[in-house]
Amino acid sequence: MLSAAQVEEFDKNGFLKGGVILGDEEVERLREELDLVMDGKSVKRPVLNRNMRGGESKLYDNMKMSVDEKVVQIVNIWMASDLFYRHACHPVLCEEIAQLCRTDTLRIWHDQVQYKPPVSGGPTGWHQDHPLWPIIQPADLVSAWVALDDAVIENGCMWMVPGSHKWGNQMKYVASTKEFKPYHKEPALLPADAVVEAVPFEIKKGQVGYHHCLTWHGSPHNRSERKRRAIAVHYMPGHTRYEPTSSHVMHDYVEVRPGDILSGQHFPVVYSSASS
Image (cartoon, rainbow, N blue to C red; front, side, top):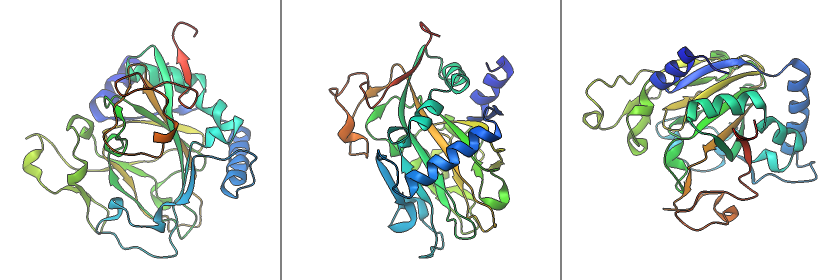
């Protein structure tokens, strides 16, 4: 359980480092399972398994791109792996996310692996998560990002902009310099006291980092000789509704009507205070 001071820090900054929740053996088992899924050798399949750098994306504005760069993205590895599903149900993650969301019920929105291989690992551009999820409201989701390798500056750890979760949906104005510094294309639209300044979010192997779905974040290239693997689970508080405005990779899995709570077998409940 998080302390009151930790919850206050999250509310202020929009991100928080949690504890080390996975031991070396647990991390190694997840790595082995990840390799099977990435290589297409698992019996079941995730929703998505691709190189994010393989096509045009607004996340890569103003960045140098190379055909050799890779950011392997897997969406809903929990659907392909019972081990990753059990990870998404981890009692520490779920209890602490429920604290941050102020909810008595949590469902999986989806999970996401982003693997930056050694030397050729590409950047993930500056963005906010919720504007990229145009079928759910409100913007109250919190993600649990667990490192499967030490994520440090040298191998492309995430960077965060403190307080940016309080600025609303600014996605179409969020941009990056060639030096991977975030900036706002129309700064007059930000609050007067807003400071667009990023800080590194280094996470140890097996450690969890939490971030709000409106917090500005991104991660630069991995030019090191080290892998950078991680599993992020995006959790929905119990009041999250299906409110589609455009398409999304999870759209085909929705079985409720617009305006209804987003629930169903593909968005399973992983925490309920009534049963905890």
